[in-house]
Amino acid sequence: MSNENPNNRPYKFGRGTDEQHRQDQALFSTLLEHHQQLKRETEKLPNGIRSCTTSENPELARIIQEHVIGMEKRFAGGRAIRSWDPLFAALFEYKDQIDMQYNMIDGGVEAVLTSDDPKLIELIHCHDDTLHGFVERGFAAGGEESPKPGWLE
Image 1 (cartoon, helix red, strand yellow):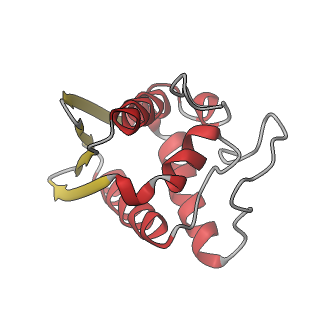
Image 2 (cartoon, rainbow, N blue to C red):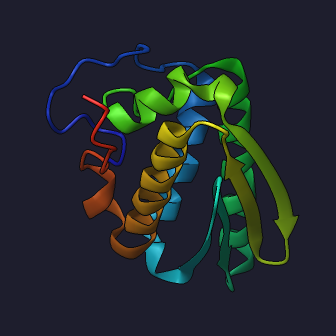
């Protein structure tokens, strides 16, 4: 499954077992399963990224949007996902220093992630690389630890 912990690392923020976590995980798994029908484009900004993740499949476009809404809620509430992965654990650790703006667009979502901290801009760029990997490789990438900045253990 996509959110397995392949390196048997500890979950820094605990492992989600509630209904909302299961729903979020199911959406993520569906996106990984159908990754070849997803498209992701990124524009690097001086302080972060602007990306668009879309699908021509209306059901997948809806799932992309639901997934982003779910992740936004998790982020706001500090309810980490993939907290075994140092990159995702750091995103939640520094969440108050990262600005995330989402716009629903035709076929998916436009996201703008920014920060004033150069270290966190690097973290945002690594997260973007990770999401590109999910879109390109699906479950194969979903089970791997994400690339991370050199300053992150």
